[in-house]
Image (cartoon, rainbow, N blue to C red; front, side, top):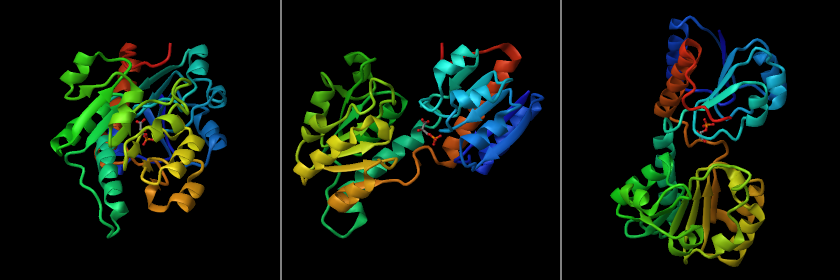
Length: 306
Ligand code: 3PG
């Protein structure tokens, strides 16, 4: 089979080598397609692909239309909001992710972001320590649980909420459950966001939640920029000069935010949560193994479309 590794943001070289080895040992042909411009180039590259391994690359209906042999898309990572699942299902294309494989990298970034904002973006201004303060984990999945464990080890009080977990499961994961998202925002010095971007969650964090946070609170978003209602965020920051926001990756209104709020906001220019050699190797090799298993045995573990 022809497997296209399509990564606008390339994997570390070590990961590419490992992916190639796994696929080629199983008799597949690999084509590496990195740093490309956009959909037109991806459509051309995908024309003869039987499978694609991607990251945040957008696999739209148009891309699938241009790839008549496509049977499998493996998202080397957790979030799959970049793949048109409905189109894939209609066309009989299986879409998978590789849950958990890059979680530690994202969790480490979330912790780093809390410290960075507490220390005034590493300016000499007097900062705060994170020990003794509270962090609310919004969605206690693979990344959320790791953020909680690391925060606890640093002396923080960890609270969490997750619509898919019972209080007991949250307690077992080392956090104190709260009744709902509203209580989480009301009670925590930091909120670390780990929800996926879905029709239900897009723009779900806005003025009301953000402005309910305690004095000096910091909102940390290593999930998706789309889950924030950007106008609501701006209004909350305007009204509350003590609040701060840090995000991976840049919101649409970032220029205005920086202009109006200076070091109270920070955004990475390019999503970097999972951009470590370790995460690339873990997620990339898992994607390659899942591809091999799919073609060898029909295994659809980690399938995310219907
Ligand atoms: C994910 O959903 O796995 C992360 O957001 C990482 O995305 P990336 O592979 O584009 O860095």
